[in-house]
Each structure stands twice: as C-alpha cells, then as structure tokens.
Image (cartoon, rainbow, N blue to C red; front, side, top):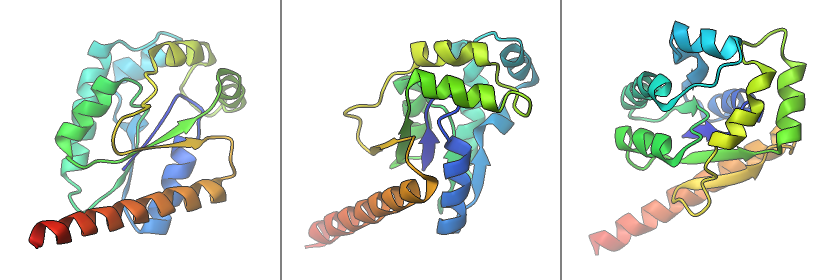
Amino acid sequence: MVIMGVAGCGKSSLGVALARQLDLPIVEGDDHHSADSLNKMQHGIALTDADRAGWLAALGRQLQQHPDGMVLTCSALKRAYRDQLRQAAPGLGFVFLDISREQAAARVAARASSHFFSTSLVDSQFATLEVPTGEAGVLRVDGQLPLASLQVEVCDWINHQKQFHQNQFQKEQL
C-alpha cells in the first residue's frame, strides 16, 4: 500500500505505524530521491515530471521486490504517478491523507529544522495534486485525525478489501 498526499500530511508517521502494526516492511519514498532532486527541494525549486521519473521507477522496483506486501510513503500527487506505481504492483492500494494548504504549511514549517523540504514548496504541492476522487483502490482519510484513529480506519479498510477479494475469488471458483 502507498500512503500518499502533500508534504506535511503525515505520510511517514502513518506509514511507520501501519508497517509496525501489519508487520510489513516500510519504504520511505523520500529516501529514493536523487541528490539533484533533494538539492532542488532544499532550495525551494519544485520538481518536474522529468525529475520524478527516476524516483517513481525506483519506487516501482521497491514494490516489485516486496510481492508479499509493504508500506510505501510517496506523495503520488498525480494520477499518472499513481498509475505508474500500479503498473509495478497490480492491485496496489493508496491511502490519501487529505489536509488543507494551511495545515500543510504549518506542519512543514514546524519541521523545517529537521527536514529537507522547503516551506516555499507547499503551494506547488497543491498545484500539482490531482485528488484521487473516484479512483479504485483509494481510501481518503482526514489527515488531521489522531494517528491511532487513522490506523484503525486504514486497517478496517484493508480488512474489507481482503474480504471483498476473497469473496470474488470464491465466486470465480464456482
């Protein structure tokens, strides 16, 4: 599964919590950016699709290397990015942490001394974001909820998805 959303929405916190709870490996998408991309973001320069291409390919390889499941934190702001990840791992689920621009700006500013992402890029994140409304395999959650509540909501969704797929498989076997 991919925990997605704009900078500051809580991808890493939720991803780590879910990975622990579900006993799955965690892959932090930010760890796979190129040095050039990290430098751009540190200096307040928004990444382009070309900048993200190699990053998304690397994340796709990570998904393929974990066929039994993993939790990936990745902004996945555009549908094309999500579709690229889906091609690498068919059936991939996404959890969209939805927060407001003001909330994202406050969170990014609060972590400015310990994170590479420049606060000046929050607006570009929202300009790039294609909200995944109507896309299959996406759960939208309120990123302002407490972490424990988010964990329960996501785990309930995962269990529902598993049950649905088991029922579909059983119907196909008849």
